[in-house]
Length: 110
Image (cartoon, rainbow, N blue to C red):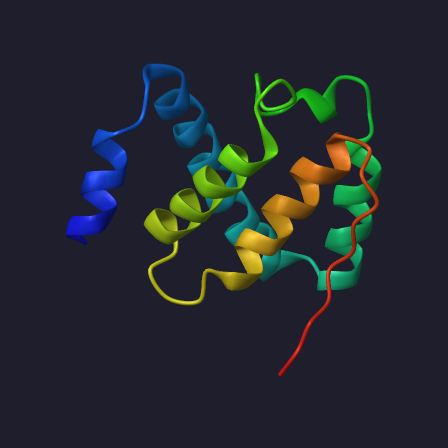
């Protein structure tokens, strides 16, 4: 908990704004996971992430460095999903990287 607070204190205003947007998206994914089967959700995310307007959500993520975006995504899902944040993080990264027109896939392992 304390380490999360230290990481939050080190963020710039733009990073805090992007983090808040990622938290909202992560919570939306939590709801979507309970309502939509995973294969349909990944298909929907893949199609909408490459849409010219929808791929811009959250704003500014396209112009942000990938390594920093990965750290913010990890923090956003850790804050919004106390337990079991691996799948929401993976889906959020799937969306963000797909919006950058990268070839990505979600792989599940046990």
